[in-house]
Image (tube, rainbow, N blue to C red; front, side, top):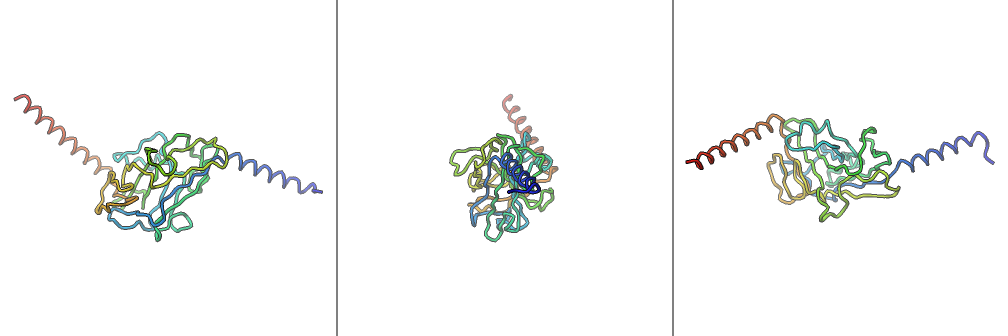
Length: 237
């Protein structure tokens, strides 16, 4: 027979189990293949200084022109980093993660902000970096899966927080088809690189300083204006 002193302990355990099952909705598995082709801008394998994060920008749309605003708008859902126990094995060149998307729309990852919500339908991104500070040595890749066509796993979109416990999703690097900066699956996006490996799963590119990005696009705009004026003058002759 249970003693009176033991009853509260059983009640606490029951409440804890009920709370856990009530807040857990689905599990997301994410990562790359073993011995994958992961390179920096010089064509060298990524080293232990790199981290891999999946997350969302919410309603903010990241572009090559607003890189200086990414950190302020980024919501970390999960992170893989060196050593291997944290999900990034630089020796074998692969990264993996397993994280729960709870019934409140949050993440159970210790690297996530408990206040952040990842609503159903929010676009998920993979952000790879050696530093989030924009300095000449910083290299990034920001990738997404914008089309489900040809996917081996699930589309990179945050699921319904009301999914029943036991539901799982698989977000694989091999399904990335959009590179805001860097390269994904042998397709180069924006950013500077020295060596094009040709075949690769991921490549980081040098992050542009905001001022240099502005000057680059200002120069392109000025060139377009001059060209338009020349064509207009020729047409009126």
